[in-house]
Length: 452
Ligand code: NDP
Ligand code: 2IT
Image (cartoon, rainbow, N blue to C red; front, side):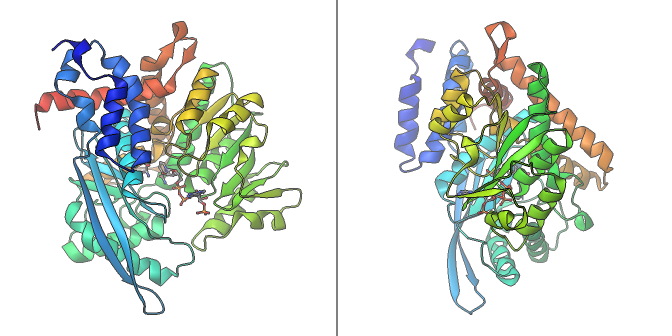
């Protein structure tokens, strides 16, 4: 069959939409990747013949299950849990677990699809997966969270394993929840293995894993700015979110000489014109820890700062933007405002925080724009290093891990440049570069396996 006989992009997306009714986030993520891949594979017959993109856009399996738990009042609560195993073409399934009321099968399918390309980009041997539940950790006691995590793992344990599928944290799942889930896995199976990453240091965790996503995003930004003849010192950043990724991105940005002006949560954002320095970041870390406080309390503590209920920080003039909260939090209109206000670079700490219109605005304006699958890959990269340490039963030193993270982010950056440089190398389309580089490794492994 000639290449021209194959289904076109619109036809392909129409098929994805038809097969996944009501799954807007999943269709959005596939579309963003497919538009670059279609161009890349236009003259590569074997990728068409083997239906590679069609196969990657169909998860290997979607497991869904009931999670029952008892709240502190003794009432039975019923939640829905999932694990989406998208692809294990280049390594065991790997990806986080999200606990948030907005979790649906569509959200987890988009995240598992993205994770497949992200993990490939890291250069480490990891496939793509994502899991989670529509459980809302906010307002729950520690005991309730423990009971939920144990019940969740009581089903999940049969689908995961150190060489099968290795979950980690994501929104609503941090060190405490990983501890509860690891404890339950160990209790059920009687095995102490590297079945999860993001573990505590006492039981097989890796130094730098907690910091890695946010730090990695800023290292990636640093690489992009350097290539463009720019640098972080003196730059002003707007950051969204106030969780693990946002606070560590803010921390690294400040350490490298920049000023952070904003943070946010699901209630709104705070703007601190004086700059959110390390002491203030530490204060927010304590606020947002296990008691999950509200960001608006910041303005009671630090005079001069303002709280903007229900808002997102994109209207605050800045040099760079770091969206680090959740998907679709930065729209086309927000992107236009950022560009008009002089923002020159965006690095996505979150997964798909910029919607398709927003990505289009940044690409058209030639804003330096790093998609999440490249910029936030530092977290899963150090998860990969945690898996290596667990397999070898060793623990690497902090300074070595810091350096490995920097090297891995540089490698991802350079892979994006290799496939994304346009206009004679003057502009790098990091979206295209990440999509193609991530796709190629997975696709070539799939070709090697034949039809499976
Ligand atoms: P956390 O749970 O630590 O923090 C999430 C933050 O985002 C909180 O400030 C939360 O506000 C806010 N938020 C969550 N959902 C919404 C929503 N629907 N609307 C507005 N604000 C929201 O999660 P992480 O920092 O770990 O994750 C943030 C992003 O980074 C996610 O997209 C995640 O997938 C991505 N990511 C995380 C990695 C990791 O290693 N943890 C690795 C790579 C990507 P509130 O306190 O009000 O809930
Ligand atoms: O989105 C992500 O890359 C993560 N939540 C981290 C996944 C992992 O396995 O460390």
